[in-house]
Length: 439
Ligand code: MN
Image (cartoon, rainbow, N blue to C red; front, side):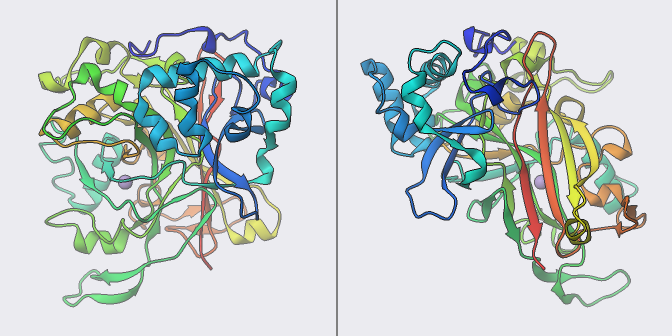
């Protein structure tokens, strides 16, 4: 159980909504989830507003707040949501997040006295277009997937796959925030420098090894002051929620540029996130212990806490799907390329990433995004990138329709999915994180 978000009435598995589609057991958005997005009617020039998913509908908070009376505390917490500013809401902190979650849960539950008032504030999700859920000021991508790091390390450095710092330092790099886009976007294949094998002069041209990375993104809520590290015991109270994240990667560019300072242009042309922010509160029922393989070093004290050991990990089942343009033209559904689970893939927890990021005094701000790194499971078929699935391009993946892929082709659409299940809890999900390669 999350020490910062104890289970409460909003997690009650018996809770049902007066929105029927929230109760079918299969939806990503039961009343126990209540994720936030920024949206407007598709094709309109309406202002972006904050919406909350319930079943296959979305509650428009700008409209909803005007339908009922609120306490002063509720009104203050709801004000940034009503004006479409998720950053300002996230910055207010866990007490306000919990206040609004409890209010939404009561308002959308069966028997709610405000059903008739709120019903006109619901919009079909299929009628919406989405923006990024918040302004992302800074983006950091970690490298917590130890199976990914080992497999990729073998491809780039056969005799030295996992560098000695990996088991001690949550490895990461500062990424590019301006090129983060929301699900549904089209990604242009980047051009860049590459060094063909056996050559001594680089080539310039379109990336030939375009890839996806299956990741989660952690959204920072409350800031810490410059020079004031966040102790691991308080780390999670700074995190607002989780999104799916596709860290598009140009592998041929990466191989040539990554030494000595790490990824640069291979990663800065596009990153796609899912529109719905699933809150840390909603994920409380899916907590699992953080463990290390026997014989591995234990984390240094600033990366260790009793709460982190007991329940620092969150069990999210992840999936990558691919739809080629031939499949789309034939009306065939996307195929699953791989599945994995966050706790099986990651060497470090969310709390450890916050504690490490700030330990030297770096200040995190509301809306900062921390990528987990590629979350590949322990077996080769659980790999979260084509680089791994195709063994560095040597072993093409054959799709059900006979097409083959080593890396992404123009027109390919990549869809990431995430789902949480646990006994005694209502399952919930993240919606789609989808992006298509132009062409
Ligand atoms: Mn990455």
